[in-house]
Image (tube, rainbow, N blue to C red; front, side):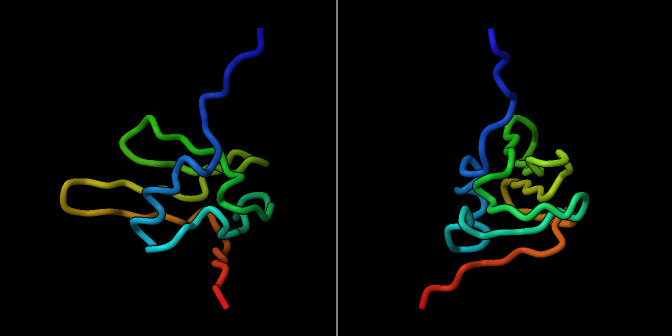
Length: 90
């Protein structure tokens, strides 16, 4: 029997990211600060079971981005990303 991973792909975080950025973020790309891997946010490993959403690098498992929502606020920590690139509609 193959163990089931405890994460989903980054698409699972689409709702929280869209409410924060106002656009679909699954096609946004970034670079991991830890290992330098470049990926689209849809390719990240999403952990949703804690008090917020955590996206981890599929290469080194480093934390890329954290989003926490309360009744009154939303916090974003993207310190694990060297950059975040958003596609622009032409």
